[in-house]
Image (cartoon, rainbow, N blue to C red; front, side, top):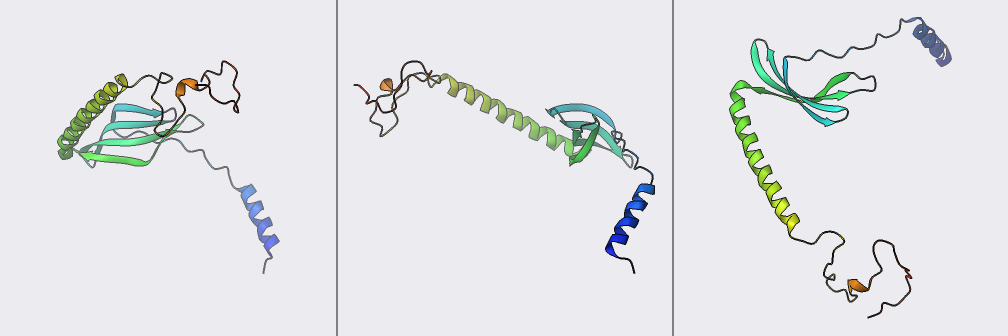
Length: 150
């Protein structure tokens, strides 16, 4: 019967004798890429027209770039069958309509209130007039214990 140290020595020796593990090569992309969305410097959404067992489909997959520069697909992705494409297109059209309305609403809201740093009404319940506060740009003398002048 071997002791724990004997097992460790045998494992180390065996590991030294084994050939080095071959480096992995990135997989070949399936189908024809029809779109790429850059999500981050090391992340892409790839849209491919692919085929499986003679049946075409739209593949939408997340791909990640590793430190060695190679791109690998991760677990996130979806396959859209041809019969599902019209519903997907309708949903994307609806999403575009909603996004355009949201952007319009955001732009209109940006035109209304004063810009940051501009005059604002005092906060509810606050007695101090904002005009008596020290300048926000750091200019002028500021004494946190000085009583405001009115």
